[in-house]
Length: 87
Image 1 (tube, rainbow, N blue to C red):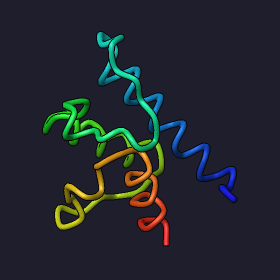
Image 2 (tube, rainbow, N blue to C red):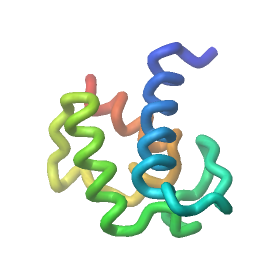
Image 3 (cartoon, rainbow, N blue to C red):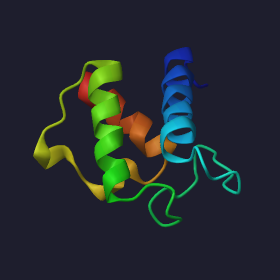
Image 4 (cartoon, helix red, strand yellow):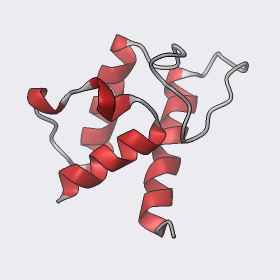
């Protein structure tokens, strides 16, 4: 079963991506498993915008050594990364 906090986190990430990174791309269907990097939904600048968002929205500092491709593969991976930072 998915917790409410997990759903809320995923929804916040999805909304950020849709509003800030895909604001001009109506052709992209975004779900929690969409390959963000491979499909070009998120590029290198998008990663840094996501990091800024995570730090501001969730109050979680992200260290340089924590910035790995696998943490930003899709919304589920970003959510898992956020949960790992909260521990």
